[in-house]
Image (cartoon, rainbow over all chains, first blue to last red; front, top):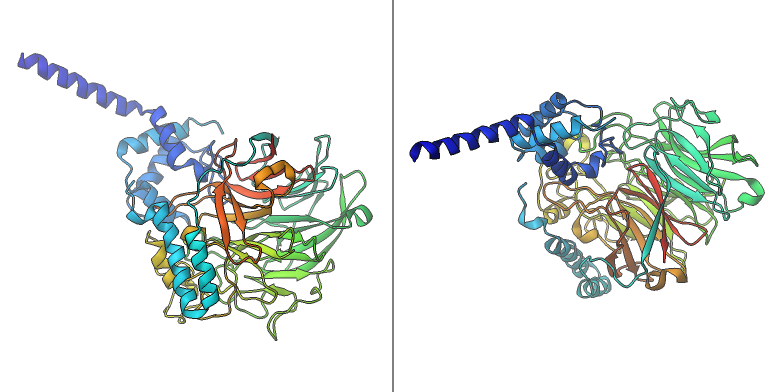
Length: 105
Length: 446
């Protein structure tokens, strides 16, 4: 009984971990639409004072969001990005990076 | 994301109302009465249900930061793209690229002095009231022909085939431009650049809106043209009847502005009405009074303020973190009635919020039903520290004296939210809007 319960828990945890590793583009798309699209544009090509993200890869997006999340300034729009990134989880960043990296230029 | 208690719209609405009330009671009993009437009658922003159903057509897509449009009576539409230049869409849908900026190669003429940086580039466009006779158009653009760079108003003629421009004359060449980055939000070069140009149908003069460049000396400067609304003739000379204070440049119609990027004219009184960006609080609609001061003065070491980053207090007392817009307004008011008791009274302060109020136009014509005569205001949307982003077009019933609003509602648009950079009523009576996303839409009532 105990063993089977542990198995279920272990399996669930493993599945969760696998999901994180693969990143959830759908969740990234939802988060992008809510938090990013107003400035970077619905297709991430940038608008006005806000840069294009469409050609960026996942490593770049992850690095920048982690930098902003740490409260470090990069560029003149840091005052907007730092508060936006403050509450992002590692999963949020991975999902956003996966979604943005997949957008066609 | 954490939500601050003051980020909710109703409390923010009270922020501006209370500020207005307290200022007017101490200064002007009549103004106080008007302000209190506005508070009592002030509705919450909500989707207006008493207007027509709207249809939407995407007139142009794939544009790069379209900034402004100007129409001929047959529907010919001149339009600017901020980093590309001036083009025209003919009634059959064909597009001709007329005047390109530095780095473009697909325009009939390329002017390498016209440059794009930050918020600056090619901005407003206007058609001469006598276009049929003189085939003249005007644009506002940043240029490196002078050192340091300036913004200019260019006048030029368009040939009969609408595929070339000629006879460029820079009728204004000394509108300040922000030359280098500073330690401010949106602090890149080219910031707070103004740029809307419109002919008044009432007096026939060209009105030019400018910005403060994050330079605290500009708004109240008698000589420098930043933070102003200019009123000039078609040669760039001061219009007859301008009444700025003694010693001011005679081209100045109003001063003490922060960054005016929308201007239109009241359909019955002819009074110019502008929209002005606020500093994370209080975007303003102002009905202009000849020679008036809009009351923006972000200089350090005055009005209770001390030193500020790069000598500009415009985002103080705190330019890097969110805080109550009411506290911001108390410390750095957009219209400082304490320092300038005779400053022009704003008609509306966007419920105490700053959301990128960038464009304005009157909606006229019976086809708009109950909306006929409403002032439209376009927002690009910007949120900071928990304030709502607010991408939308508002319908505003502005009092005829321009000192208050009777009603504020929101247009329910088929395309949803977008950065509504320009809104212009076309000769067909339809509404046209350019959005930063790269399209120009036609919005028609059913």
